[in-house]
Length: 255
Ligand code: MF3
Ligand code: CO
View 1 (cartoon, helix red, strand yellow):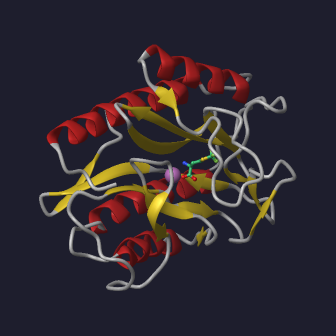
View 2: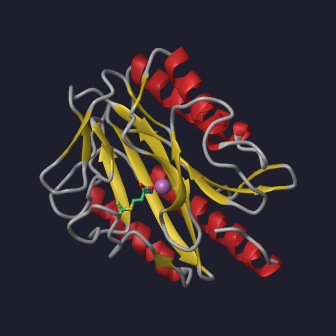
């Protein structure tokens, strides 16, 4: 969406703050022995307590055969994104990394964010993967300038991930957000500077680099949602919703 009024901007900023606080609480709760289902239940409860709506639950992304069944996506280790927390028992254990991806609608406006958290001690390479993917998100945000191009973002994200020795998962990427979970433009996590759609003042975008510690290829599980790395290697994912304004980007999903 394009933010046009002060009221829309205020709803976006408040929704982003709430989402960031909930994600932080989920990250703090994630520990050995905790289940994906418990995290999903807590996410939904916190969203509804604030008077907002979880916007992934019941949402059918383009190409999906059925609505997504939960509020939260929980993607463990080789699960890349869209792991379903409430259809099988998934128990976190020491050494795992877990992607937590959550969206909510506040005052009619959708915000979308994700973090990857380490469960106890994880190995050095996994920490490097997490740091590189998080740094790629920061680089993507710094490259997201009104009057720039979508390819500026993809280029910045790709450079950080590949310079760290990791691979960009090519099938997935960021997107416009605000009225719906997924809007135009699609924001590839690789690309060339100066190419692709024009970035404009007022645009609300979800940037979400996704990196693999091994090969980039992914497969979709029989549940129709869970993406995994084909070679079983670990994957990391971070996402922020941002607003293009005043010649730069404001990160919305921070507390
Ligand atoms: N944050 C996720 C994304 O942008 C949204 C997941 S929608 C769901 O891909 F339906 F798959 F949960
Ligand atoms: Co998203």
